[in-house]
Image (cartoon, rainbow, N blue to C red; front, side, top):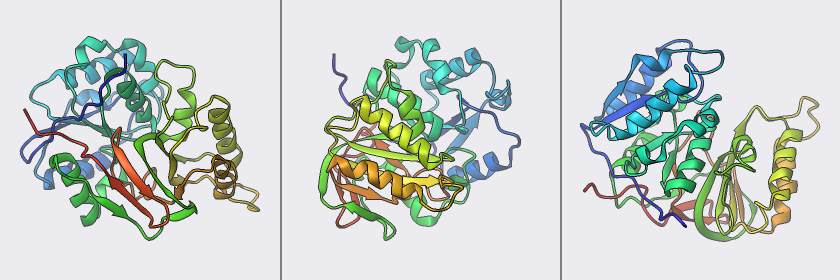
Amino acid sequence: MKNQTIQPPAIKKGDTIAVIAPASPIDGREGLERGISVLEAMGFHVRFDERIFESFRYLAGEDSARAEELMSTFEDPSIQAIIALRGGYGCSRLIPLIAEKRLRRHSKIFMGFSDLTTLFLYFKRRFGWITIHGPMAVSPSLGDLSPNQAEHLFSLLTDPGYCPELHFTQCESWIPGVAEGELVGGCLSIIAASIGTPYEIKADGRILFLEDQGEPPYRLDRMLTHLHLAGKLQSLAGVLLGSFLDCESAQGNYHSSDVLRDILAKLHVPIMANFPAGHGIENWAIPLGVRVRMDSNAGTITLLEPAVRMRD
């Protein structure tokens, strides 16, 4: 049965945002403190449990502890929004431990990126939830948030009527045209890893957003080719490319953009590149699961519906 798209309730000043750690651990608190200061300056309260500082190998604690934190935070009525501590790795290990009945009725704003793409895909497939691809608690893109980005993020989270047209001069039109459809995607490597799972991405008729970090061009090629062979690229409405940080060849005679353009141009759909979202210092928050219009000629993305709904 197809899930209805569900917007999370808007939040307001004075509401509580919880920080959870479903993926990798952190080494210190400085980045977290900067991120919390930005959210508090917007008027929100920020809560976290000391559990988020646990470390088990490359994970922020045992799987059972991270899964329970995820579920109990969504269930907690005193928490209105949730932001991930950081990405890294670990979200896929939580999938078998999630009790869907504990989450299904508790849609909330949930923001992150990178490894959090796994949970975004899962929540969309299982519950129809809209999620926010945006800065995490320790991300420099939150701690050093510009005034324009802060205004956008606040409106995205609090205003049920906010449907902006986003325009950035650095955006490039690789294939001109206008596309409309549901915005889906996230981190390319995580999307490729979703193939064959119960939460693999649905991309037909949609605008696919992709970004990544630290993947050399041949690996970008391999992942995109895998998605094509899996039938995920043939019926797209359009492609939106974010930042591909540290994805250049050590040989230096070609660029990651050459590989991306070569593979994606064969899809014959509008393609816009260099959108400021992803692992870079600019990570403009965008809702996944809402309908958007992408005008590659004008370099704009327009939300056709808001990310949040009125509070009950």
